[in-house]
Length: 545
Image 1 (cartoon, rainbow, N blue to C red):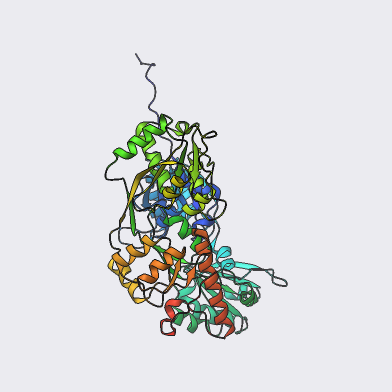
Image 2 (cartoon, rainbow, N blue to C red; image 1 turned 30 degrees about the horizontal axis):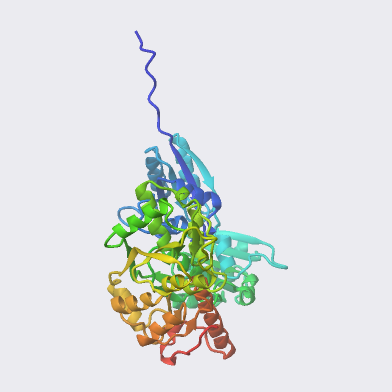
């Protein structure tokens, strides 16, 4: 007799999301692509840069446990590119785990990519799938190079992949614009065939490598000369080539490679927690940031003082709590989680934040700052706006100040002078990080960095201590007068000083410096070079004010 009460085994859901990653810049991912990456358990990658793209898109460190598992779907064990069939097998095999799988593909999955073949394999294997389009290199890279594919009088566009089949160039002799993919290795031969097919030898040609990234490089020539020019340039793959009169518009429309800090290698000596925001802003101006942790944030050696203060906060012992850094917010929040508390424990307590960044971190916790400096965002600015103790209006005269072990006493002394009692508590310690790799130390000392941005006196002291002094050709940017003074005490000549003590103002000041430097080079008829390329010319002492 058949047992009808037994339930059939539940078959794991098998589903793959084919996601176009665009030409390389994570900022060009679609909203849907980021949503899927956040939810993914496994990401099948296609190119080596995809690992970093996933990390940046999700805002994660390389060793963050929240990173999804990465499976190489681009190269085999022999380090050679996989065939479309081999890639399809990897995708199907990964999907059969029943986990949430994203197949990340360069450009767009359905344009000169193996997306159709892999999707067909999924369909045959009974694996469900969806396709999330991405920006194709064929359109995005020329845009980043300042080369429109259509313009007044130039309407026809043909996109051709030159990596496999032979092409009858006579069919494209009169096409206004040609976009060529995988043509770099054969560009000299292709140019000759185009001329033989009827294209004028003086037809403009552009070739762009690493499109949309801060390492982007573009060369411009003609069909007659592009072969020799490309050999000399040694462009790194992938390369997108445009042939046609529209290339002439690049001289006017180039917007990406003319950014103030384009291609600048900028050293970011910060804590791991603080570096991403600074690096993101630097990339916005075209820089290539390299983060070197100089400070490690660790719990206090004696946690009892912090424990006592948290108990006092819950019991209503304080009128105010003052957060002077995002690290202080994190330290208090970790203590709350340790005790099983949440933001409701702050009920009836007034909250002060040293600046907008700290206030924003509090807001992520569900807390609104009652006091943020109206002027300078610093301990001095906070003190300037702090109300004096009033025996009638203030039922309690005590302030809880969780801070770093090396913080200054300015705020404490000022609050005491205004009648407040302050529990000045070490919430976290800042200690010197381990030295960076030997290659980075050598680059710092020999001037291979174009600039270094110092965000505190401690970053100056610690960088010099673990890696040595930056080369005299390196542009030095400081967040404020105290940091600048420390840099000068260490024998560094400060070129850029931020208008206000904030990361945004510091990067803006460096960008202004870069823009002025570029304009001066152009006006004098000199080639636009980076500071690391002009070591012998010395450095100008220019402060952005």
